[in-house]
Amino acid sequence: MNYDYLVVGAGLFGAVFASEMKKNGKRCLVIDKRGHIAGNIYTEEISGIQVHKYGAHIFHTSDRKIWNYVNELAEFNNYINSPLAVYKDELYNLPFNMNTFAKMWGVRTPREAAEHIRSQIAELDIKEPGNLEEQALSLVGTDIYEKLVKGYTEKQWGRDCRELPAFIIKRLPVRFTFNNNYFNDPYQGIPQGGYTRMVEKLLEGIEVRLDTPFEDFVKRNDKNDTYVTNDGQHSFGKILYTGMIDAFFDYCEGALEYRSLDFQTELLEGEENYQGNAVVNYTEREVPFTRIIEHKHFEFGQQPDTVITREYPKEWKRGDEPYYPVNDEKNAALYQKYLRMASGQKNVLFGGRLGQYQYYDMDKVIAAALEMASQERKK
Image (tube, rainbow, N blue to C red; front, side):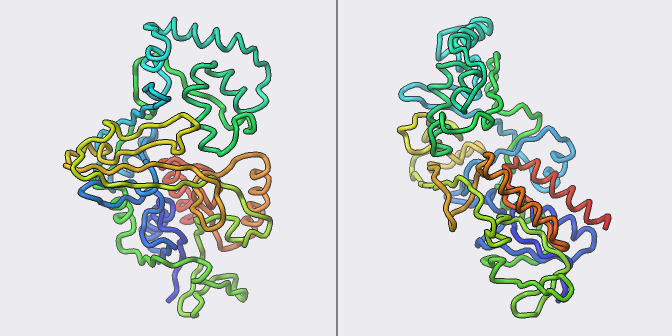
């Protein structure tokens, strides 16, 4: 059988692209090395609760077109992301807002809070931040940095903040209102019944093969610059590759770096409410996990049980799931080498966070996949 496209990866980017190309009359085959579709937004049901298997995913966007697009795929609830932060025995609201400042300093007005921050920044007198710590201190002062930024960031990156480049934190949002909504986007929510159903709808009528690693499935046909399956039974006009771009080229220039995560999920039978909020961050360096997710709160669940997940950051090594690209100068230069190699691939497209080595919010993933599909339709 001849396919127009082999889509490598059944995550959001690949599913949107395949769906759009199917609408255009193209035949697609989607493969994924995992045993399920939906990539990192995969949700599975445990005790009647939709569990975000690979960490919390809250859909948010300012793009009305994208919001309309996802609402054709699922009905979204009105969940508003309002995380909390625990530092020792203190509990704070995120993002940094008047509730945070009232708890931290006992202030009541925006003027008082702003003066606290200004005075701390002035005392530090940092002219040109030389690392992440100096950058953060120059933005929010000592108290916020020490309690809510330092430990969490060091856990996330596995390095002392003084060893991290300043550009990682370009800004730290500070709000002088009592608004606990983490995002500024006007549209946000969680698809009722989970993200997996949403991706299932995208992939309706499209052939999908799971537990199918790309490198074990196809080989290049150098005669006409296309790809065929290893058994020679199927051929593909083009490939959309959403895996790691360096893996596609067999790491010939070296491996790009990532941070990875371990998820420890626990069903608490007979416990209706563990922490009272979907997301609670733990900002001390000494606490080994970065946050606890209580999944039922994403959909305002009333189940008699609850499910929680602790997230443990770790160094990535080959074989681990890559989550966050390490966007420092060394990796940026290495990615440019692979990007030049990718541009020389006549019939291969690279997309998604791994194919393009960048962290994407979900709305940006969808927008990029729609744009790629639009460009393909013009050819």
